[in-house]
Image (tube, rainbow, N blue to C red; front, side, top):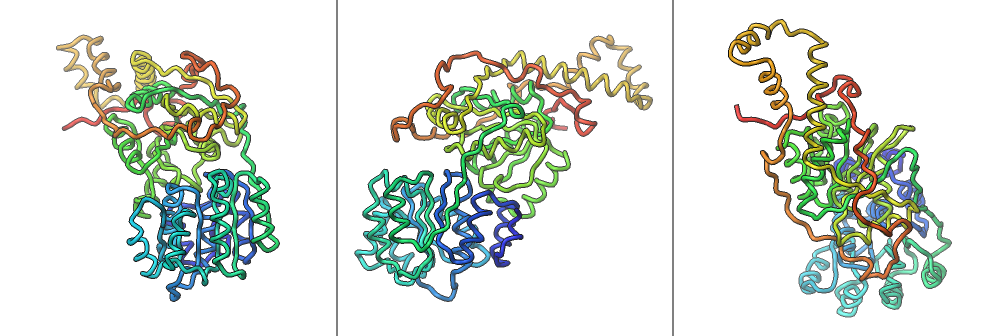
Length: 488
């Protein structure tokens, strides 16, 4: 479903379009209409399904911008989730100009009080800091119309259930309550019974993946090794069109610039780009003017991009639902697709979680060597030369060729041509800023390993054998070899 098919006001639709969203996710499609009707909703869904827009858009629609009191409240388990949620709601509200603020422990409480007094209409935050602000009489909830409990099971696990109930009691009884949780333990169900009015339940199950259409691989690499491994995989697998996911906007910018420096046809897309730039990049990608799109999860969510042959998770996603959403971009309509996920040694627990919840083990992939990448480029170059000869139209260049043959042998000229068509990555050094790995999930939450997570040795099946596509597969859209830019 498209967002413009929902009963949303023009200001919100404009912000959605500016963020690059087109299609709703399942949780959004089912939750937004119910919430717009004013109904209470219990949503059972994993992180990464698009929950923020599912509750954020109906909440924003109800906000009276002339009323400078708190009208919307979102309770989240962690500082990180609260900040992420506040940022996305702020972007969604950019055209309606709703004031959104975030409160959490460990930050200057005086500044947070000033922001609330400054007319905050939506407050996102963690339970402990919210209670502190309520006790100081700085956070008044008597005009709250929409209350959201996000990742309720995580708040239960962290011991926040009593705090949440205390906060709820400060809000009016005549309010709308939206509760989201990946699981539904009894204490969460009791919240639904005690504090919600005839809630509608929306369940979004973790998808299962069709192994027959998507070949899924992982490759272990340290963060500073990933880029060279990526470019070798691109050379060997030679994707017709690929989507590469980076965790942050800075990462996307550096990856797209680095790929361009090495001669690949690549551009990046994320939330900080202007609407016109985003639309221009997507248009070029859909038309085949470039074959690699680098994106953040937020920028890629809801985009109508089809026909992808490869998805590369340069940074492993934090949750299984994002993984499913990412790789589901390829292998559509019965076509084969390839998904490769880069995993640092410290992030293996996230791979185990993905395998466990999708019930599909990923195959270990040995990265191609530099020699294998070069050999693949040479094969592609020779195919392109053969194609150029077969197409003829070389009359204009015959005189120049004859002059060169006076001084050089045919073998030397052919070798020079091939050399000009392939690239040595070491000629163009690229530095990608290091990022901290995701926190060790198995230490922090005690989650077990999934199926297929043992025997993580080297070797394994290599997807690049037989997966490359010749120039004839590309229907003349582009050359299969990429040439580095050279100064003229």
